[in-house]
Amino acid sequence: MKKYMLQLTMLSILFSGVSIAQETSLVPQKKWPEQEKDSKFYTISGERHGQSFFIKHEFPEVQYQPGENLTFDIYHTPDVMYHWYRLWAEKYPDITELYEVARSFEGRPILQMTITNKKTGKHTNKPAAYFEGGRHGGEVTASEAVFWLTQHLLENYGKDPQITHLIDSKTVYVRPQNNPDGTTMYLFSEQSNRSTIRPHDVDRDGLFDEDPGEDLNRDRIIHMMRKKAETAEEKENANYIIDPKDPKGRLMKRVLDGKGDYLMYSEGIDNDGDGKYNEDGIGGLDLHRNYPENWRPDIGGDATGRGYTQFGAGEYPLSEIETRSTVLWLLSHPNISVVNSLDTRVPMHLRPPSTSSSEESMFLKDRLIYEYYDSLGMTITGYPWAGDVYETYSTRGKVDRLTGDPLKPNPLFGHGPDFGYFYYGAVWYGDELWNNGAMKDYDGDGVRDDYDGLRWDDEENQSKGFKIWEKFDHPQLGEVEIGGFHPKFFSQNGPPWQLEGWIKKQSLFNLAMALDLPQIEIKDVKVTKSGNEHIVKVTWTNSGKLPVALDQAKRVKIVQEDRLMLEFDKELTKGHENALVQITTPELYNKTIFAGYTEPGETKQAEFRVKVSQKEPVKAKLKILSTRGGYLEREIILD
Image (cartoon, rainbow, N blue to C red; front, side):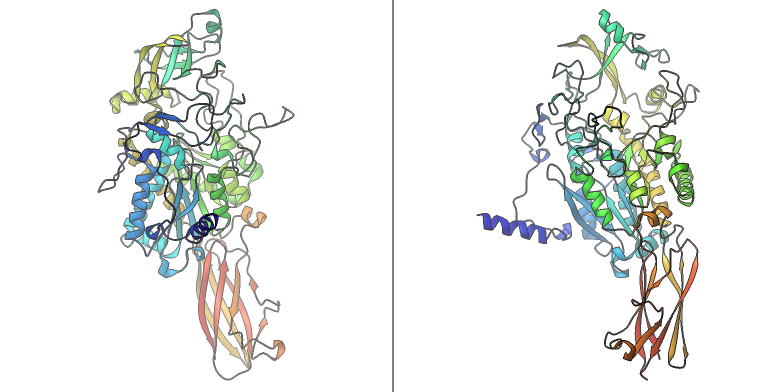
C-alpha cells in the first residue's frame, strides 16, 4: 500500500506542471464544504479552540455558479473564476498556459495563468509583468481586478494593436486568487478573514481562534454593536458619540475615552471572557506582513519589549505557503519588471518604501520612475493618493482626527512592495481599490470619511450599504443596538454595481505599466571582412520605457548585465589556436561581450572579430541575453 501511494505521489509531482485544461488526477479529489449541497454548514480546516463550522450563506452580491456570460456587476467565487480560466485556457491555447503554482493551507489549488504568444518564443525569454489578487481573503475587489484584466487581454488579442503587440512580444502572469481559503470562507459564511485561515493566537492568551464573531440577529452579516454607557466603568471607557452631522443618528464618531456616550463592539459575544469581542477570529496572520524584506516578529515576539513588532507577521518570513509560493516563483522568474499585488479599501497607488522615506532609501533614478507611475496612476484611476507607505500612506490624513496631533510617518514591516523593490528590484505596487463609498467631500471639511460614505449611500445606493440600528438583548452586555455599514459589500468592497468601474480603471493602470516594459531589439547586424578576419558589428536598443534594470536591481544582483554571444558549430571551434573558427575579440576566454544595462531609448553597439580558416561560409548564431529586456537570437553567415 505504501509503495502504491508513493507511486501516486511521484506521478502527481511529475504531472504538476501540465496545463489545467488537460489535467487529470489519479488521486481522489477532496470535496470542499461549499460543494456539499446538502450541508447547512461551512467547515474550516485546522485545529482551533473556537468553532470551525458556520452556517453556510449565499449572498445576493455573489455569483456562486458560472453563467453563460461573464459580467462584472457581481462578485465571483474562486471556483467561478477558475471555471473561466479553464475555459480561456481551452479557447486560447496559443497564448495561454494555466497551471497550479501551489496548494493553500487547506489544500486548495492556487492557479496562475501565463499569457504570451507561444509562437514568438518562450515566456521566460520575454520581458514580463505579474499581477496578483486575493491575498487578503475579504478584499475580493482585488481578485476581480485581475480577473477583469485577464479577460480584457485575451478578448482583445488580435483586435487591439497595443494588446496584440504586448502579448506577442512580452509575458503577463496573472494570479487572481492567492488565498482561496480565506476568500471562499468570506463568500460562503458571515465570517471575515484578513489572510490565511491557519489558526493563530491573535490575543496571545494561549488559545487559537477562540473568539470569532457571531451573527446574533441572524441577518447573515456581522455588523457592529453600540451600547449606551450606563455603569461607572462603562462611562469611564465610553469613546463614541452619535455624530451630529447625521440627523438620523446613524453615524458614530470616535472620541477620547471617557468623553463618549457609547461603547462599540463587533457583533458577537466574548467567548473567552477577556472583555474583548471577536478579537481572535478565524486565522489572524497577514500574508502582506510575511515577506522577508524588513520582516519583524509578531506581537509579543520582541524579547526586549523595546523593539519593533508587526501584527500578523507569522512565525518567520515566508512561513505561509501562499506568500512563499509568490516569492519563490518570482525569484525563479527574474524576467519580471512590473508587479501589482492588489488589495482594498484605501483608494491609493501604494508603493515602497514602507519603513523609511523615499528620499533616504531609494536611488534617485528609481524614485523618479516610481513618481512617474504615481502620477500616471492617479490620472487613470482618479485615486486621491499615490506614493510610499511610510510617509504618504501614513500621513495622508494630515492630523489624527481623534487627538488633533499631526500624523507622523509610520513603519510597516514584512510588506510586499518593500520585497518587490529592495529585494527583487522591480517596480512593485500594492494598490488599494474602493473607498467605503466616500465619493466626494459632501461636508467640505477636506476629508472623505464615513459621513461622506453615508451621504453617498443615501443618495446613490438606495441606502443599501447601512443597516439601521436595531435593539437586541445581548447575553453579556444587556441591551445593545446592532447596525452600521455592511462590512463585506460596502466597507471592504463596494456594491456590485460599482465593481466594474473600479476594477477597469485599476486594470488600465496595470496595463499601462506592462506596455512600458523594457524591450531589447536588434537594430542592425553588419558583417565585414578584412583578410581572413570577419567583423560582426551589432547595434541594439531598448525600445521600452523602463530600463532593463532599476539601480536597486543592479545593487542586489537580481538582474545580470546585458550580454552578447556568438555561437558556432562546436566542431569548428575545437583546437584552441588551431581551430577553424576563432573569436579574437573579445579576448575573454568565454568570448562574451558584457554590455552593461541598456536604458530606455538607448542605442548601443558592440563588435566581434572572428578569424575563419576555411573557404566555405560559416553559420553563426548571434545571441543577446538581457534578464529583463528579453532573449534574442539571429543567424548570420560569415563568408
